[in-house]
Each structure stands twice: as structure tokens, then as C-alpha cells.
Amino acid sequence: MPDTDPSADPLFDLAFGYDRDLPLEAERRVVRESASLKLERFELTSRNDQRVPGLLLSDPRAEGPRPLILVGHPGTLDKSADYVLWPAQQWVERGAICVTIDQAGHGERARRPVSMDDFRNWPMRRLDQSLQTAVDWMRTLDWLTTLPEIDAERVGFVGFSMGGMRGAPFVGLDTRVHAAAFCISGATTLGGNPASPAAHLAEHLTDPGVYAPMTAGRPILVVAGELDDLVTPEATQRFYDLLPEPREIVWLPCGHWDFMPQGIAPIAPFLERHLNFGEST
Image (cartoon, rainbow, N blue to C red; front, side, top):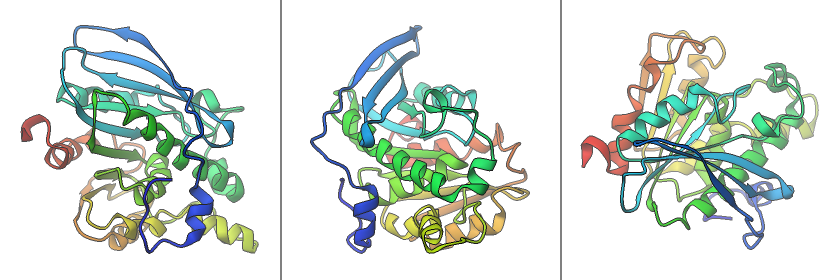
């Protein structure tokens, strides 16, 4: 497991640990390519022998190592959704490489249709998928940092809704992520009052606020909707209040479901400033 915050409870090592020498068995192929955008599909092995499919977007004209932006999709969507590919393409145009994966239980990994009830009613399932997704991101980064086109010193993360909530433990625990943006995400989960000690632990391990203090020294951006009725402003504010410096927050006059397209406007300047690409170079 990558280096973690030394103040973290050993429980996190148990919950998110994995065998570092487990073969990645990565496969990679070009899906389509134009003059300015190459889209590649990859697949690799994560914990529990899960095969994790993902997409890598890059500019085929670019040379040399480039910054990497990992993009977490919202719940009920997947790696191929325009919600993630549209902003990713814009960041590629500005000089980055972007990667998104199907998070546990979504996309090619879904065994049945995904609904919002999955997040509200099933804390243990949410726990399993949250832990798996965080490790999947770590394993994906293990592979990506071996690629010559990736600058391992300029890694960023952007998570939308569930992508941000599942991304919080990944960012908190994996110090290879140098800057992160959490969008329409908050510090509380949707599970309600835990009915048992096990459910209480599940709530604890899936609460993004638990991992917020572990980002000390790394710049974090929070982008939120003032009218969000799913991840409430109170939940977002709690997450932000738990973040150490450096941090910044942007409130937009929108809700959860109309966050796009205005929601990505603050992200590019933040990433470019802290990962040194685009207009900042």
C-alpha cells in the first residue's frame, strides 16, 4: 500500500491494504484516435482478483511526460459517460493525460442496474464497493506511474458526487496524489442511522470526512451547489471544515443534478496552477 498519513489508524491498513507484488496483468488497446485525441481502453487486476476496466485519454501530438488527472464518475454512471469524458477532453487539450475507471459495481463491472437505493439502503454493500474502488485507484496509479508519458510528480484527482466520496479515502491515503478537486461531494453518507456495530463501522469507513485531515499539505478544491438537495451544503461544509490547509471552496448557484456544465469552470485553473500545465506554464 502507498505511504499513508502516519496518524492514520491501523484499521485503514487492513481495510485498504493490498499485495504490492500482485501482478497487474495490464492490457491496453487504442479504441479510437483523431489528430488531437487518442482514446485507449485498459484493464488490470486489483484486489480480490477484480479486473478493473478504464479509459486513458491523451493528445497523440504531445511529447514528454505530462500531468495525470484521475477522474471519478458519479454514482449510476460509468467511465464512458459524457459527464466525465467531456471535461477530461478539455483537460487533455490543455496538456494533461486523463484516466477514468469503472468503479466497483458500475459500468462493465455492474451485475445489475445501479440505483440510488444502493447508496441509501445497503451500508455493507457500500462499504465493500468503497474499499474496493479506493484500492482500484491505487492499483491503477501503480500501473500508470510506470508509463513513460506520465509525470508521476504531477498527479491530480477530480471526483464528482460518488466519485468524490469514494475518492476521499484514495486521496487521503495515497500521497502520490498531489492535488484534488471534490465536486458535489460531502462528508456524510446516505445510509442513515447504523443499525449495528458493523454498520456503524461501515459508516465510519465510508465517510469522506474521516479522510479529509489526511490531505495536509496538498491543495484541495471543493466545488459545491448552493441548492444541492442530495449532498447538502451542510454535508459539503463539514467536509471542507475538516480539510487542512491549503484548501479552497467554490459555491455555485445550482443543485446536484444541474451541476454541469458550469461546475467544471473552477477546476481547470486549480489543476493547472498546482500541476503546472496549461495556461500556468
